[in-house]
Image (cartoon, rainbow, N blue to C red):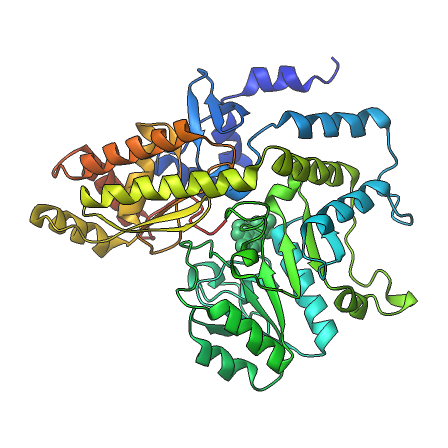
Length: 472
Ligand SMILES: Cc1ncc(COP(=O)(O)O)c(C=O)c1O
């Protein structure tokens, strides 16, 4: 019988979790079952996922910001079909392909003029790893400083930039010289690290994935001055904040920064083919590729493959043509304003923060006595439980996909695709209002959900399961 993928999918859709339990990550399967995330999605379009009964789910997670342009965008689909129809030569390696040149040109049209040299790779963490190598090669220095609560990916170099034990436990020793982390807004702490003049790079996320925090002061501007003073390169990790997510094309533009290196990935894939990029100054780039015999000293087999490059070019076109950066700024402001108004009604809400459509809603202990008790019981077990309870109910009752923002955080995070309109904003706000109203009933079905998490956690003697509660 001829191989027919459509037939296979039609016949076997629904076996997803069983297959994963058998062959892939069964711990993740178990966690998804506990939090009620074990849905089978059959189709996706724009801001919506559809299950096997064609029920729509509003996707306010966007594959951790992969789908800024929405899912299955027709322009990207056509670009992929065009590449296939043309039977282009792909990954010849010892040539210079047109599509990678075109994507490099398209990116540099959108970056400030000094960021004019590009290296392509396949993922976010790979872009960070490369950026760190470029920084070391350019400065001749070993150390790298990062921010507390950072997330930069999970391969060893990126992981070494993060202090978060829930990710590093069991994987040490980490990279030597990568262990200095400074709190956001603590310029003195940064100065103390940089003044030894042995720091190759200071790495930032302008809006942190874990909890959507940004400085409250002019920290980034002053940090850039310190970097220049001490000869340290400034790396802005734009893997999540880039390509319109924060209401500007790049996060660093909110502070008019001039980073020496930026990293991109996620949406550069068009939502189809993994693609990462390092964008830097030509003179920094050339310090790595410094001689003929070093022309491929940093490289990766799949790095400039045609499908990824075509997806990148198409995704950038869509972002511009559909004014998605402006829409992210507008819808983000509206969403934050409307959620903020709920604070008067629900004492659970502490703060709504973020930029554009990268938004965190942080909870704190409610004022009502009865609820205080329930809150305390849950928090004794795990700080993330209340937020997970809300996220679970948003999906089960309202079919809206969101996430908790990080380990031990009372934060729900939303990353809607940048194509949403007022309809989706209202859907989210009304659902969120309803879920928090339910939380005010104690005892009640919402706290029963929390109770089930507690039982699952105590049963496995592990922290309460949650989706991948990371910046991602
Ligand atoms: C800011 C940031 N940097 C790096 C990464 C790592 O990207 P990837 O998962 O593609 O390796 C992520 C992923 O969530 C991220 O949000």
